[in-house]
Length: 457
Ligand code: GDP
Ligand code: MG
Image (cartoon, rainbow, N blue to C red; front, side):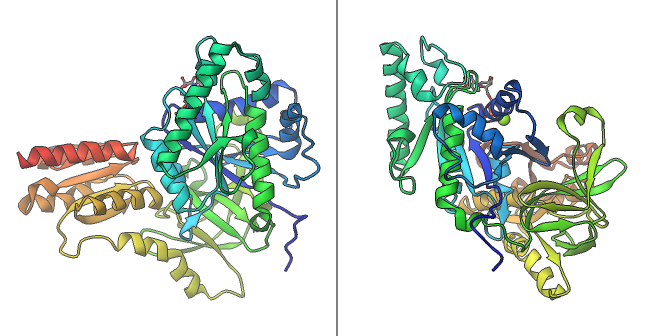
């Protein structure tokens, strides 16, 4: 009821792939292409996301001579800004994912890399359809750029040897994807969107292939996801981040995927010390791009509609956990039921700690990244004594130091994407507690496994 194929919300698109494949550059290019063509109007920076309205996308894809107005009824596309493996993990949403569609970026010169493969695993586990951008085509030797052009126009005017390098490298990517159990084809040869992954050659430097990439994303979502994208009055949101803002207090950045949020609404979010029930004091989005430099200035809203990136100010958010679902508490809801529901994910993941109290300490920025870390430790048979979300403080070091008396090699804190306070660092050095830090999960794994090897010798 209330849902209609004529009233759709914007799909949420996440950009994933190995570091340095060009994820950020691609997004920048899409933004800038629009601005250069004098069509900046409508593109909005949101909290953790960028919104591209349909008019804008239509302008870029026009060069493909496809009339998208015929079948695309989507209002636009919401692209998650902090792309990458870890941020996708943060898009947890009641056991699945908040992303409707993804772009997997591969560097044509490197083919599939470690994080590409991890991204594929994650996308499949969460059943998120994706297209694969084969980026940096301009690096094929002797490439003749045709800025902003649809990729087939550009390929048609390449010298034979350049085209041949492009073909060989693309074929290699297809073979590597096959090794991962995926069928893939260049998008213009792909007739089976559902079964076969579409490859879109792109260059984030020249903008070649970007019209194609957007067109493929729009047709994929419009064709396969109408049901899922019908606007629903039932509010769905995921907490992406918890941040302290000067003059505002602790806020949560949420991805509003469905329904509406109003100032004054009562929300339920997961916290380190149990569920938090609080009232929305302010609904905020950033100032329009021009005024971004005015520090701490947000636009206040009475009401916001999905899909959208929103900052929420409310009381008692200090120990809220990123990577969890947020619920709305209305007169029809049972408060206790919602409290249990919001903590269920947390209980699942926290429940994996060793009952004997023997093992390493684990600390991460969000529930999603904590989950990924715990999964690694589980498969590696490394016991975990305690888990925390948020920065490493002295009390965490003190807790980890207990292991010094039992199993010295476990007197460690594996800290992923979190700050370590100076006091905690000093205390760790004094006591002999090792703190491993990294921003990329597998680097953390590598450092720690190397250290364990050393302990054995
Ligand atoms: P990310 O780590 O995936 O976000 O990668 P970035 O967007 O930061 O890009 C990594 C590097 O690759 C930067 O030096 C970019 O300038 C470069 N780069 C990205 N896209 C392209 C491309 O299409 N062609 C070329 N030649 N270089 C690119
Ligand atoms: Mg980047």
